[in-house]
Length: 328
Ligand code: FES
Image 1: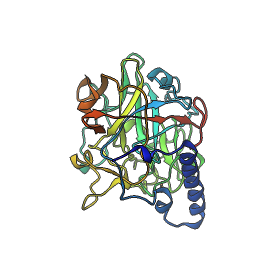
Image 2 (image 1 turned 90 degrees about the vertical axis):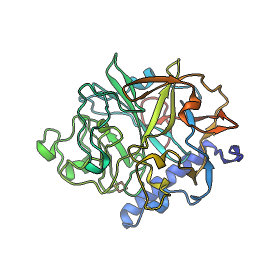
Image 3 (image 1 turned 90 degrees about the horizontal axis):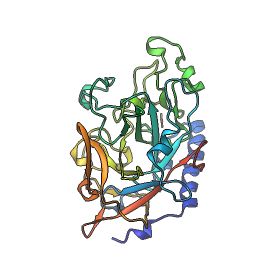
């Protein structure tokens, strides 16, 4: 398949997201289903064979590093935090890039079928596919920015850190110094202003939050995008954590499975491929999987390949404030 023809100029991508945002606003008034506006109409046309390996770049085309992102890490005392967003796995699919200081995001001990329990860090290994900087105790995690209720995207779906309870959340009963169910979580929530779904990023890939004063209308977590680094600490996205949840618009299996090994081999249908990079594919990538970091060639990741060579894509990180200002 010739994937290059699927590349889309940046302005068109922005137009799509902007259009989705306007549609959401209109539908909030009208009370209609949002999904047909948030999901491209050309679903069912495969544009990629597998998840792409994509290097994260700033809008000028410079790869961003772990320390670039760590400058904007949110802690329990943070009042405002820029929204960092990149598109993955497709060009029209926003993903949050979050850095959280003072917490190690770990693999939950509970299975999806037994509910979404709070994660106890203890000595657990970092969750697969996050970047954990033990020197500064910062976790960097990427989570889909497509609300798993009806598909609202940033800025309607937004991360509000520990010292920032949005007005909409106060309306349902959250308080900064609340107790029990009214307590705003220490690291805040990814909160959807469309209908009030809540996702706790500290819970990693199993982040659906129903412990507050009102339950989330979404019925599963924001999918976790897997991250890796190269020897220069540049950041790459390479897949979706199949043990958690898949982006709801990718469901194509009978019964609409949202977890499990079948997610790994899903083809990506509809939408538009991210853009191919002209950079060299890194020879070695390091990523967290299991109890310790693994370093290997990208071909072992099962990412997009043509004729047994890994194809490197790129994706641009933009923010609403802070670095890499852009529209989303
Ligand atoms: S789209 Fe309904 S809560 Fe997010």
